[in-house]
Image (cartoon, rainbow, N blue to C red):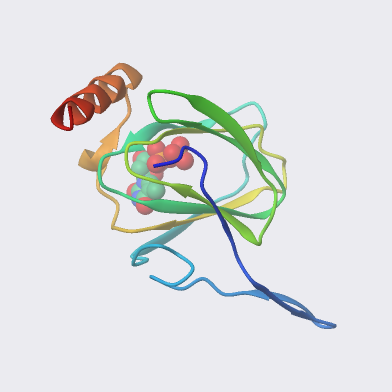
Length: 139
Ligand code: TYD
């Protein structure tokens, strides 16, 4: 599983503007069960700081800009989300943090399942431990 996985959406555009279509199991690689969005964010208040055991998500910055730090327990990388025609896959067991939101940022997230707090790993040490346990199953 690669740490950074972008999905490029087709843009249907004409003189009236642009239209992007997101569909379960087509350009989104799972069944979309939940959609949520973040807005009214502050540059100096990062969010996220967790991983999910089973949940898969795609984040799309539909307005403004922010940075996403992705970490799979082996490497970490920061990417910029600033395009409404590109989604970033946040797969299972990927620690992620959102930083440096612009005031106008609207971050939409498509999720494969309902909200379930027990799917969250909010402690980084716990995340690393669970990654190591998963890896040892395949050794
Ligand atoms: P959280 O996932 O911690 O936000 P972020 O990763 O953006 O910092 O969620 C913030 C709060 O919102 C937390 O109390 C859980 C609640 N929440 C729901 O009730 N349903 C949802 O679908 C989501 C994403 C969060």
